[in-house]
Image 1 (spheres, helix red, strand yellow):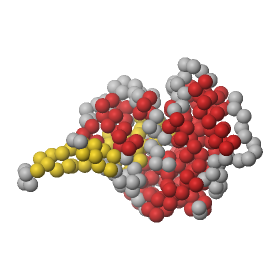
Image 2 (cartoon, one colour):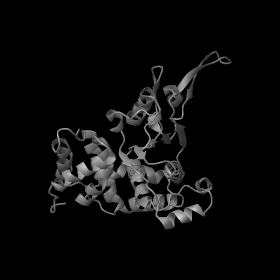
Image 3 (cartoon, helix red, strand yellow):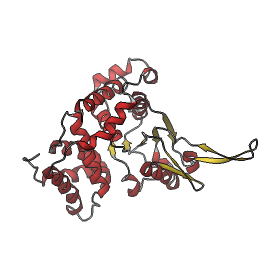
Image 4 (cartoon, one colour):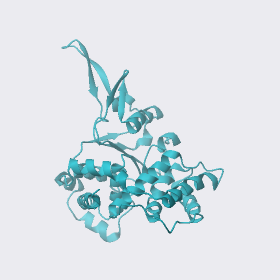
Length: 310
């Protein structure tokens, strides 16, 4: 395994996307982590912080197709998956694919659609396939969904159920820039113009390599035990809090592997686990974001960090 290819991949993605999204290198790197692990991202933040532009820039960087879907209460599942329509010229039904048939999908304000439409994403996210009228079609790889929602506004929304939230690999937040960074953004060219000018900086071969080789990053028995201690701790610390699922444990394991590879190591250390845990686990716990983060911190503070045989 050529570990330097992971570092070059991360640097290329972060450098290119940061031309549009200023001061958020860590978030860009975490999006790349989820992408390499074939995971999906739930982005929660107030409007106007660059959520849409982040994904547009990321799609341009990796050279993948991009589709944006604005979720509204009247959006139907067929608006996402596609429909079979009758072609009068041919005298037969034809399948017209929906916007989910792309590489990078932005599900904008996902909590504004009805639960029925929200659930139509599940098969695509989990199985990488779409079934319409009994016919199943595989989705082209790579495939990634980034869903956005405004955590402050609840009027006219349908909160995501736990079963669907658990399908997201990470929950991230961009937050505001510093004063100096924002002054620079205010005086520069249009963000949309900058996105359109971006070029692909990582090849399809590089993407295939990192997505297949990251699993070779070693996780020692003590570090694996540390991951398991965290997962079990979320289930026993407070009986009123729903603990992290096995799917969440697998996600933490994979995220730690990619984080180690990005750092130039062929093995995972506890710091990789500690860094990724809040982003991978908090949205799988009950309560708000701040409450879940505080709960996870209490759990992790009680767990002994392995120091040897890493």
